[in-house]
Image (cartoon, rainbow over all chains, first blue to last red):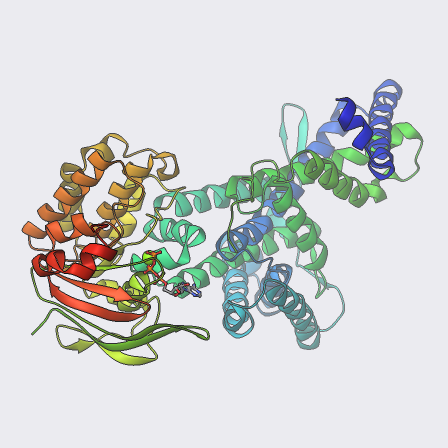
Length: 353
Length: 237
Ligand SMILES: Nc1ncnc2c1ncn2[C@@H]1O[C@H](COP(=O)(O)OP(=O)(O)OP(=O)(O)O)[C@@H](O)[C@H]1O
Ligand SMILES: [Mg+2]
């Protein structure tokens, strides 16, 4: 003990003080908020529901990061663009033209299904193309190379779709059926939020079954562990990698539609922040872990939505809501200090390149 | 015609010339062993046969068909499977899932089920642990799983890379008994071993590798009597 204290250098003392200060401020703010009680229970539940909806979106996008990382140990920074490309294309070519006909309101479910299919198919197409052209040739390059390439691919697709569909914000046509809200036990939940949460849960369950139960899902896990031995089993490793990208992109495409329903707009830059946040969620949950991505997304969404009011308003900080990103990333740092492998992640020490 | 014909292959790791013209042939129904010191090129040879590595020069024929340019996963479909050095089971998959992966290239569900039962008869321990994650198995159990997984491909040619490595003597005996049994049921075996004595006891023929070249090729019996082999690989005076 004494030795450890003597070995403590000034920098780590300062860092520990800083962490203690952050924790103290959070606790102080929380207590102050609770004492002041500026919000009703209903307000808090609203925050919570919005957080769950937002978090489900993060979770769906985070799965794409985690699946690809699990198989290739690569952080696919272009994933946010897979998310954007699908719904942007589907909005321009399907949702808007369709909303000008009577079909949009007379058959809303069918219309949204078509939008979903086109969005998912586009996202998958972009992902498969990116993998084939930009990532596969660099499969055996040092890890930094595909990372830089992914950032490049991200910019490429942003400007590609900006060139294609313009740089303005495009409104996603409103869906008559989803106006209003569902009231359960005094709690009012917007129909769009209901759809987002239910669809996300179904997709998450579907993905889990796919990865755990199907032959292709098992092959994905085998490839993630040992590509060479997977090939010795007769698994076409390249094909499984493409399927992994495609699966993540399909979920991102679906998430794109849910985003459009929630926020009613699409634009070429829309992939950036959700992408970063979903990546944060994946790291938070333990990158490479499927349940981790789901949990990380949910946590992040709820923290972002409840955190500013709970932690900061009590400290007298005005317009705390604008600081939600600070909350999100502070939480990431705090979690990683305690658990570097994320909430559900395994220790990466023995993992090979 | 030999089942497997390896014809003067040269294999490189970048600039390292690991195999310098290796020729090996294996007939249907045989057990053939490759022995040699550490780094002689035994694993490199069978990995080149499996398509994980590709020879820069030379050819490999399976029943007269060239396979040396095929990717690994296509070679499995032609009936060659391997239990690699160091077991390399999928640690996060269950025992059953590992065996299913061994049968990945197949679609005859009845045959797969039959072979899974056969593996469980061969290694009853695996059946007891079928739902367990493979990373938590003991070293011996992992070796059984690795061999069982290779058998699930229903191979005509089974490649075993040092199956006795790191196992207690009693388990080594059991593994070699199993190799005999697998062979008796019609699977041809190419066996890489450090334990030359055990290898000669099951093999019909053998090759001695030294720094990427074939030093000797003879029947197992003759190799066992060979003075140089006795001195270098059997530790006899
Ligand atoms: N991935 C690799 N990269 C570079 N060189 C390698 C690689 N794998 C093997 N080698 C080299 O090739 C030669 C043959 O290695 P190989 O693994 O085939 O030997 P081995 O006979 O199987 O030895 P052991 O009994 O130790 O398993 C050795 O000199 C080794 O250093
Ligand atoms: Mg070896």
